Length: 236
Length: 236
DNA sequence: CGACCATTTGATATGGATCAAGCGATGTGG
DNA sequence: CCACATCGCTTGATCCATATCAAATGGTCG
Image: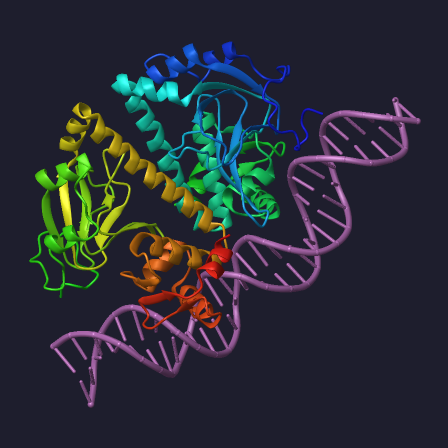
């Protein structure tokens, strides 16, 4: 079984039919022009396919590579000693993950859906950054974006369940789509672990939002934002 | 009254007697050697004194300066529309704050105690970073440290009150002192707003930790870590 | 001494966790 | 093609940690 959660470290899978190829990804949100780092990764990087729930790297492993999602979706996470899991972030096509300031990764990374990931040696990036200020600057901006996201999440985590879920929906919508249709790649459990809630609370909150006509739920993973103003009011 | 909370935007106060001078601060944890950015700030920066509870910069103001605490303590924070306040971080002598990736600050900053702060133009720093890779690298590392702290806080915020308070104490101890004596510059309300708890819960949790012999509370701001192992176990 | 502010302590309320069961889609084997 | 197991999600009932409301205590400064 390709999709069982116990599969780990088997990076080179045959590409499942459902995964979109690089070409289509490049035509979409993955751009290379005007971005020296992106360009370099596309020139020098290798594409690896990961089936759903496969580990891409593990906590405490040496952080030797930098990754960029081409298709699918990736989650980073940390498992606490008592078994709770905190999700560090979700990474969508075009986004870079695996940035680290230590020698080792502080989180693990897994494919949420069958995914293609571009991989490049960190040492190669660092060497390039040393010569090309544009690349150094881009790395700096990527780190800044991570920082901003972490700070935004701190703000989310002090709020009520409704505010967290509403904030999550708006964040995802802002990252994936111009219109109001949202196709979530992650499970309710993933969302719960991202927001520091239980799966039941996430589910209940979504139905509550549906009752208050703020969203529609045609299917559990397909969410339509009906009333952004109401959602924004919740996040405030 | 210098210390009332309503005082804002009055940056240049005469230095209160209680504030330590630069000399003593430099002799302490503020080092300049081997740190090009720090050295530059000391050479080119101006020292400003801020009385307790005075604003250093405000949310949405242009982020034209970079700051370094010389003495005292600074908090950054955000006030939400419903009046709740989230503290972004505490900055102790030797630490840099005001880093921003937008043109404007995303948080406000205030002195917690009477403080001296070294100020330097961001444009000057950026110009230097463009020429001196060592300075660019130092900026990068500072951002990385901020990122790490934000991520650590995300981990704290999904935990119980005991775990958050224990984590906070260990973090502060790690930053301020080699031994087990901790002199907190911030109020219970500051801690509460940092940890996403109420002041009552922080107070109760500290007394509970005292009862379980994990800490001692000679005075409300002076905390002795009696049993680090127990605290670490809580944080897990 | 007396006013003020920070902190602690007590009593009660509540939002979200936990425990438990039901539901609907998807896929598998007979 | 249907019966059935599985998995992800929803819904219901109850419990508990923390918030909230209220009051007492203690330390500091005029």
